[in-house]
Length: 93
Image (cartoon, rainbow, N blue to C red; front, side):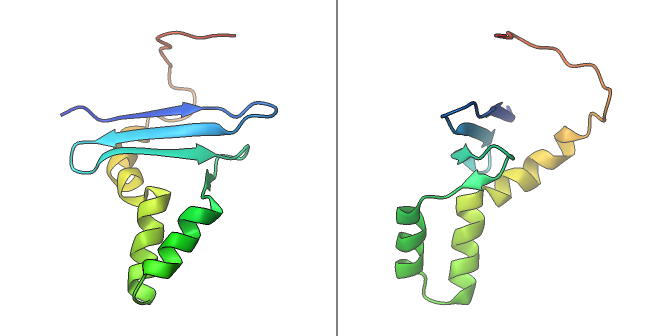
């Protein structure tokens, strides 16, 4: 059961990107700001607001757009700790 998270750091003039996969949720992909926040487009927010039938549906929709379920499931795998060795598959510098 493969799980992964890939983060492309933003660079001048370009948004970053975050891709997560967990078997129970599938694939999640979102743009990421310079400080690491998920960026939601105006169109996606307007669509959610137009389709949400109440506060609970709006909250559930926002959680989905922000990838909360993916974050929750991947969190146990993120505890390598500061100073832990990192193995880069490739590094472009």
